[in-house]
Length: 208
Image 1 (tube, rainbow, N blue to C red):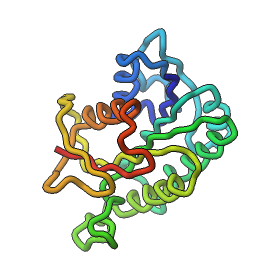
Image 2 (image 1 turned 120 degrees about the horizontal axis):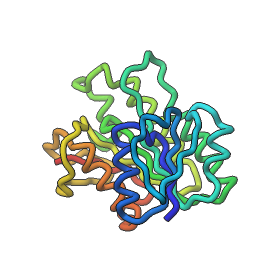
Image 3 (image 1 turned 180 degrees about the vertical axis):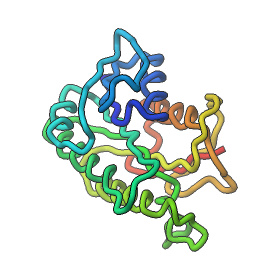
Image 4 (image 1 turned 90 degrees about the horizontal axis):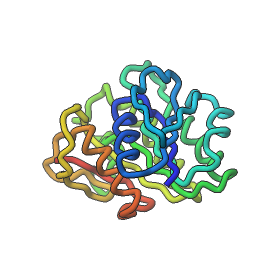
């Protein structure tokens, strides 16, 4: 498949690019700073752009079969709108170009704690992550109200370790007792979901 990866120079994005190339896909890496992406491969194409610029997104999307969004922030003063703004631009460009499917990464806070409450609405949810989770929830709302096929992968803390291929997933909820997952296994799941299509139009909790 021809896959466009947003956030390709980040920790998760770099794994998605590497694993996608290993799987035989043609990968376009959307990056603002190409020097941060160290990979070189005949099937890898770099696209220079800014996720906050709708024009560069509009120009990047045509010709691809699938969009992967690994956009995120580590430290940014609220209000945070980067992810939802970018996904809004992506969805508009996808519709214009006829690209049918997007897999986006969010956070565990936008999963259901109960049938009527999100995890980020729980009193025990860390306040530091609340503004990030609120923007990821806006991404979820955009995806849910779009006419594209989508999956939103919602991991907790993602340390960088090893790819095990052994993890638990659950639609719309967080796997019971889960604590963390390595960034390598989040990428592993996303690459597998491309062909398995087990969570179309759903959020997915993932953890060990």
